[in-house]
Length: 231
Image 1 (cartoon, rainbow, N blue to C red):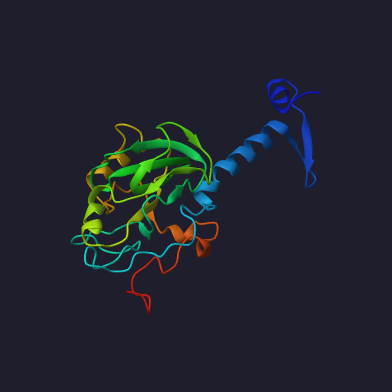
Image 2: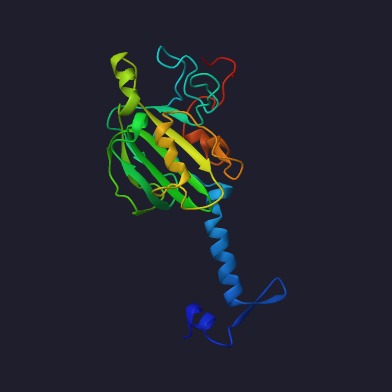
């Protein structure tokens, strides 16, 4: 039997009729690959933690709390969600991808993982206690990549008797490879737990609630400030 790969490589590529239109299998395969890789842009992200943790409310360390649009020093925006947890709680890859960063000393973010999901989508997991994967490894959605901890500037939470959290961010940056060594997203190491602009070509941090498979299962609380009944 001729495989799809053989059919593409042969001079006379086989065809299929789809909705009354005859299309070469090669074209259909390209379309299928494009649809699969576009998932990162369109949604389908899974929960990074079990049990729908509470989004961090305001506290003595962060008066604005840990929502996506909380402020962080002057006019800087958080650009991420702080998901409260317990030390050692499992953290999972939110979508398939390649590990661009897996470092135990990522500035104020402490132990940090960044996954490049292709098509310009990235997820960031900060303040980890441990990291369970290596740089450049391919990971699948739902695989454990580390554990929640107090690393980086989250040490201030431990001193204040506050719970640890996962710093979870979703970046849409227009192209893949931007978190590799020497690339623009590496500048995040210098920013701590806020997002700063990298120019008009890079969309930047986006509210994760817009891209999750089912955000109601991923956390409790609003991702933005000003919601009645929340601090």
